[in-house]
Image 1 (cartoon, rainbow, N blue to C red):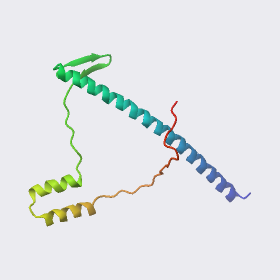
Image 2: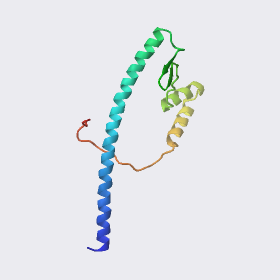
Image 3: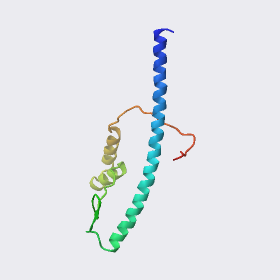
Image 4: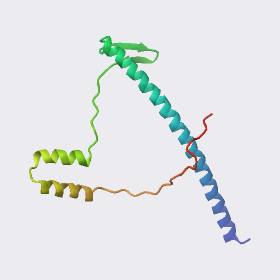
Amino acid sequence: MSEKEKNQNDTKKMFIENVQQWVAIDTQLKMIHEKTKTIRSKKNELLKNINDYVQNHELQNSRIEISDGELRFYEKKEYSPLTYTYLEKCLGEIIPDKKQIEYIMQYLREHREIKTSHDIRRNYRNKSLSFS
């Protein structure tokens, strides 16, 4: 076997090992993601129950001491994302000329920054993974 063939074989083996490791890590991440989703769902359910109690008993300004700190109850504001629909609606409220709005919207769509990268997409034959 020539040196070139040996290098090609080594490179192919390395490629196969990399693919196998990638698949193993991707599987682990999928399982962690599913577990995280379950935990987050339970946390949100508990949050709703706690907040209902806090609101019903007017405890909004209370603090609860816990082993490593404290819990405070507060109201937070979440802003909806900036979408093309939202932008078009807002522009319609301040610019009377629909042609100008269409021009602006078209300009924004055509001049968005596009980032290109390379990735791997994994397609599963069966939808469920077993968790142990």
